[in-house]
Amino acid sequence: MKRPLVVLALVALVGSGCSGGETPRASSAPSSGLADFYTQQPDWEDCDDDFECALVMVPLDYDDPRGERIEISAIRLRATGDRIGSLLVNPGGPGGSGIEYARAARTQVSADVRARFDVVGFDPRGVGESTAVRCMNGGDLDAYMSIDMSPDTAAEITKIEEGSRTFATKCQEKSAKLLPHVGTADAARDMDVLRAVLGDEGLTFLGKSYGTYLGATYADLFPKRVRALVLDGAVDPAVSAIKMSEVQSKGFEVALTAFIKDCLKATDCPFTSTTVQGALNEITALLQRADQQPLRNTLNDGRKINDTWLAYGIATPLYDRKSWEVFREALKTAFQGDGTYLLRFADLLLGRREDGTYTNQSEANKAVNCIDHAFPSGTPAYTRAATKAAKLAPRFGEFIMWDSLTCAYWPVKGPDPDRKLTAPGAPPIVVVGTLRDPATPYEWAEGLATQLTSGVLLTYDGDGHTAYMSGSTCIDAAIDNYLINLAPPAAGTRC
Image 1: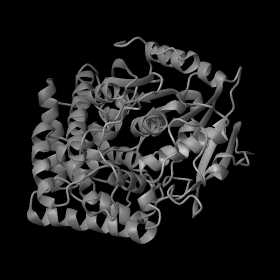
Image 2 (image 1 turned 135 degrees about the horizontal axis):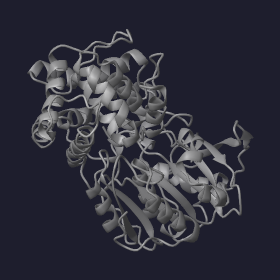
Image 3 (image 1 turned 135 degrees about the vertical axis):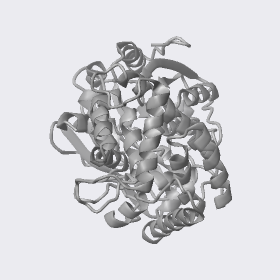
């Protein structure tokens, strides 16, 4: 469930009422064969609402820069005042669209920062409007997403194996040439090309969720080209894939508990119990009920709302506190046997459109995660891990752990997974952690800030996924001051 940032889509729902060679670290000059990419001049064209769009060319394989080229789609909103440079943004995922995120710049980046920087979004390689990974059609993805990820029998485990193997095979059939080259290290090299093309001596970057891993990877590759990096909702790059799923499972449990505590104070709280544990038990019972008999789906799109769809739907609103009012209504109808609202939440997380097609964010998510991290190769390891996760995180553990089985069958592997990123020689890098973040638990922010030689930890005592522009004036002021004036917050600052 290491998925893209869904806050923008959640706000819309609330409103509706419901690998290769690297450029040398110490020099700003590109390696031999890369000069054409670094000096290109994209054709920026108007693309509505004061935005400009362009395609930037990068090599498919940085070890063979004179070989095949691929496209990186970029968008920018020009600075409104005394311009410092460009602010590259990434919303997470992997698989999240930086194009869509930048289009929301007026709500996701403060007016003070927008006055001084062009806000530049891009879809990383493999994602969205850039050269993209493709694996399955909408119907196939519906079938894959419907697999029971809380298996009770050997036959259900076999179905997970078959579905996971099919997903990996179809990705290889449709995207074989691209799959070896969609790892985060290559995406970070693309960012350095973008930095040069935009005319910036140093990179200024706002990365959220997975975007923190992308930013930390950039800093480790190009520490001398860092101007200012904000890594919000941090991923710890040294954590193994299985441990990451385990810790994330516990993070969703923490966030669900925070939601319940808030809910029990509301007049429209749908739980019959008046205690946190009692409400958690009601969620467990709801998942078990859907496992035995799917809930009603008034969308009439043929999908059976089983416990897997419910788990996705329950996890999604935990990303953003602003969605909790709608979440209460969704749970109320689910307790009454109608899972449609929770299914709609799940669709936001998975990138499913109303017409039954999907964005490629779920496919890109698998493609990047499977090459970035080292995964066990045999089902028994996942069985043991899922059993452990179910004890640590009864509502989410199994679903998140079994969801990664696809990577056991992935046709390509990354070169150097799960290692610390230290970025020696980089200027101060601000790492932001939220205490009750469901998707990127606070301990990951602590880990990344400690690994980075120049890491500075900024803590938000709050709820939801990521902190910047989420309602804390303290967080926003600290980040704005750092981005504009290169003045990082004092170590240990808590908002």
